[in-house]
Amino acid sequence: MARIAVIGAGMGAMAAAARLAVAGHRVTVYERTQTYGGSVRRLERDGFSFDTGPGLLSLPAVYRDLFLKTGKEPLEDCVDLVQVDPSSRHVFADGTQVSLPNASRAGVVAALDEALGAGAGGRWGDFLVRAREAWDRTRRPLLEEPLWPNWQVLADREPYPAVPHKRLLRTRRAATLAEVAAWELRDPRLAALLEGHALAHGLDPRVAPAAASVLPYLEHAFGTWYVRGGVRELARAVHERCLARRVEFVLGAEVTRLLEKDGRAAGVEFADGMVAEADFVVAGVAPAVLNRLVAGTAIRGAGEVQAARGPASRLTVLLALRGARPGDSAHRTVVHTADRDGELESVFGPAPGPAASPTVTVLRPGDPGLVPDTGHEAVTLTATVPAEESRSTTESFARHAEDMIGVAERVVPDLRDRLLWHVVRTPADLAEATGAEGGAVPAPSLAAAEGRMLHPSNSTALPGLFTVGGWSHPGGGLPHAGMSGALVAGLIVEGPEFRGSQ
Image (cartoon, rainbow, N blue to C red; front, side):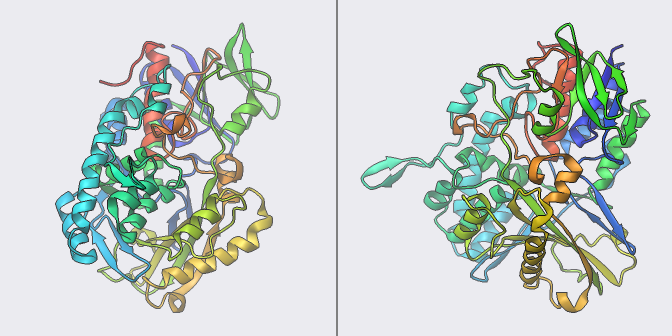
C-alpha cells in the first residue's frame, strides 16, 4: 500500500483518488480552498441555486465507469441524470431559429432542412459522418490511453477527412474548423453552429484544426445530459464516493512545494511549513501553480508536449427571475452574434477584450430544486471572453454582463421586468477557484495542428509525480477530467506499461 498525496480536489483529481483508494492505496487530497470540485461550484442565494461552472454533461459513460469501478452503487443511484431534449435551440443573426433534437442525426437533419432550407440538413449530416471518422481515428489515443511517447504522430496527422475543395485553380482540403464551415457547410448559419462549438470550448475556429469536428460529434453521438440539482451534484457524488473509499480530504491546505528525495517525488510541503511524505504525488493544478511547486526541477523532458496558457475564459451571469419558467422553454439556447469575426478578434486577437456583440448561451433548466418555488426561475448566461486575472477590469465585465442580458432578452421575454437580482462571475473568480492564470479554461486535447492542441502527458520526467485534470492529457472538460483520473490511476497501479482500459 502506497501513500499518495493529491494536490487539488478538482474532478480529475477526485476521480484518480477514488480509483487509487479502491486499488488499496492510502490517499490524501490537499485542497487550498474550502471546498472540492475545482471549477464545478455552486452559488446559493435567497432560495436560488446556480452552477457557476459547467451546466451540462456530455459523455456520461466516463462517470458511469468511475462509479462502476469504485463501488456497488452505479452513477444513476447517486445522481439523477436527465437527457436534455431538445439538445439546444439556436437563434441566428438573421432571426432564423432551430431546435436540434438530442442524439438523433435524422432528427437534426430534418430540423435544419425545415429551418434553414432544403439541403442544409444534408450538409450538416454529411459533416457529422466525416466527424465520426475523425472521432474513430483519435478516440483511443486521445482519450483512453496515456499520451504516446511518439505523440508527434498525432500532431502531424489530420484525422478529419476533409472534402476536396477547388480554390484559385488549386484543389485544397480544409485544415481549420473555419475552413470546414466555409467550404463544406456553405451557409453562415451552419458555420455559426459549427464555430459556436469551438468558441464554447475556448477555441478560435480560425486556427483550431479540422480535428475539432469531434466536439460537435461527441455531443451529437452521446447526447447532452443535465444533472438534476445542477452539475455540482455530480461533484458531490464523486466526493462522497471518495469518502466511502476512505480517501482523506484536507481543505484549506495550500501546498507550496513538492518534496523530492533520491531523484523522485517524496511528498508535499504546506504554507505553514508542515510536510506530508508520500510515495507518489498527483498534481491536479494549473501549469503555473505546478511550476511554482517544482521550481528548479525539470518535470518535462526535451521534446515533450508543453502546456500553454489558455487564452480564453468565461463570463457567467446568474439571473434570479420572478415568474415561472414557461413549459416550452428550451433548456439551452445559443444566441449567435451578428459579428462573428469581430467576436473572434475580440477574444483571440492581439488586443483582447470582451466582444461588443457576444454569442451568449442561455441555460433555463426548469429544475424546481434551483428556485425557492414554482413562481421563480433561475437562468444562467455564459459567454467566452479573454482570460484576465486582474480585477481592475471589473467595470468592463459589468458592462459586458449588461450586454449579455440584452442579448438574452431576445429569448427570455420580459427579462428585465422579471429580474430580481443578478450576479456576475468573472475570469478573476475562476482564477481564484482554480488557480489558473487569468481564469483560463483548458480546452480538450485535439490531434493535428503540429501538437499545439495537445496537453502534456500525465507522467512526468520526475519519477513519482503525475499530473491530472484539464491541464494535462486529455485536456479540459468534465468527461476529459474523468478520463485523466483513470489514466493516472492506471499508470500508478500498473506502471509505465499501462496502455489504457480495454
